[in-house]
Length: 121
Image (cartoon, rainbow, N blue to C red; front, side, top):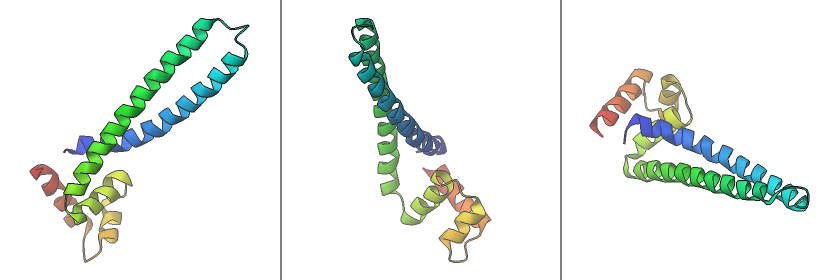
């Protein structure tokens, strides 16, 4: 696991949320197309099917990324899970992370601990 994958996790979470919104919009549009089927060509309905399929594939990719990162997180030490969660997922500063970690941690010590861990994994 590298830092890029952790950043991908954050993006995958947002992509999942945005894609679910797009799927809901497509479904609402489908209902209006079906109710106006007399006026609208059948091709519009087929285009909606294709769009929904693409959105579902995008959603599945985002979920795969999230699961991969979450499985990795369960295998690393608890302290590092907390550091990763605060710094990468919650986008806190190193100083804020150190305060949350407690036990006389400093921004620099937590940052170095994170860097050493990521370099070794």
